[in-house]
Length: 161
Image 1 (cartoon, rainbow, N blue to C red):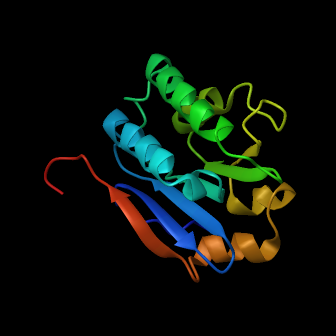
Image 2 (image 1 turned 30 degrees about the vertical axis):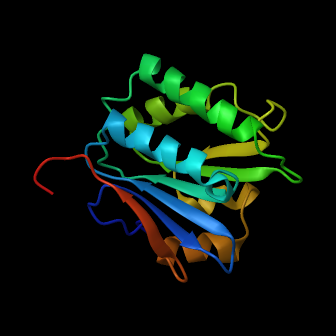
């Protein structure tokens, strides 16, 4: 089943009942949008500490996210995550189908693991169903259908939208 994502900018949707977030990356993802996402997480530590599905649309263009730029954002997120007192591990599932997108996400997740000081278990998969190692089937189905999720933030730095 194909994940339903409309061509929107970077968005955060939250399901308060399940305490889950979905972050969608669609279209041409600008580095400035990733920086704005990092600032939003720093300003809302409960968001930064939430279990999250990150869904990179199959046609997402991540070309602006060079390794040097990602390194700067990784340093920012390390500080944010280290400032949070995690009592249990945060779950961070990434769904990415395109080879180009996966290369960027793999670099982003490089050397990330549950004992790296950031309190997060990460998993990269081709489909939501493949995230069964981290999330329950009910959580996966909610993320797929967006049942109970409400958009909380839209980051759009693209001209003409």
